[in-house]
Image (cartoon, rainbow, N blue to C red; front, side, top):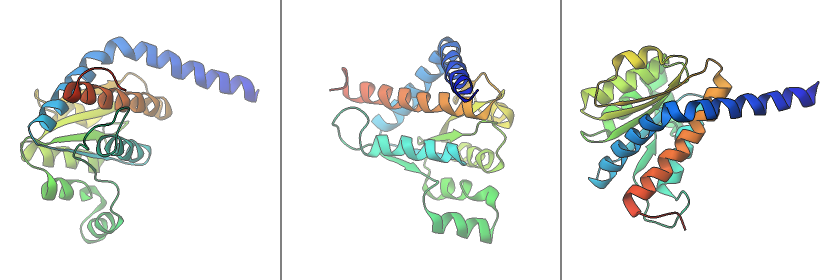
Length: 197
C-alpha cells in the first residue's frame, strides 16, 4: 500500500508537469523577459509567499544573489520572508496582512518586480503586497494555482500570471519550484548568454 501511494505521488506530479508545460511555457517566458528587463535596467526583484511558498521565495533569491548553474555576478533579489524582526513587528503593531506590503512600500521602486507566490491566489498578505507593488509602479509575476483567486483579478495587463492548472497544494508547489528554476535559468541566459557552464 505504501509503495503504491508513493508511485501514485510520483506519477501525478509528473503528469501535471507534462500537462502544464505547453500551457505555462509562454507566461514563464513572459516572466523571464520582465525580470530580465528589470535586472538589466538596474532594478531588483522582491519575493513574497507563505509557508512552502516562502521557501520558494527564499530559494529564488538565493539562486539570484548566489548562483544558479553558472558563475556570474550576484543579482539583486530580496526574499521578504526572512527578517523575523520586521515580520513580527509589523504583524504585532499592524496586522499579519501587512507583513509584505509594508516591506514593498519601504523597498520597492518603480521598475522593480514583485514575485508573489500563493497556491490559492487568495492569501490576504500576498494580495496586499501586490496592491502595494502596483501602487509603486512595480511589475508583478504571480505564481498561483486553483484558478488564480483574487490575484488573477487584480493584476494588470503589464503583469504576468502563471497559474498551475490543479487544485492540490502539494502538486501546485512542485510545479512552482520547477517554474522558479525556469525563471533562474532564463534570467541567466538572458543576462549572460549561452548555456550554463
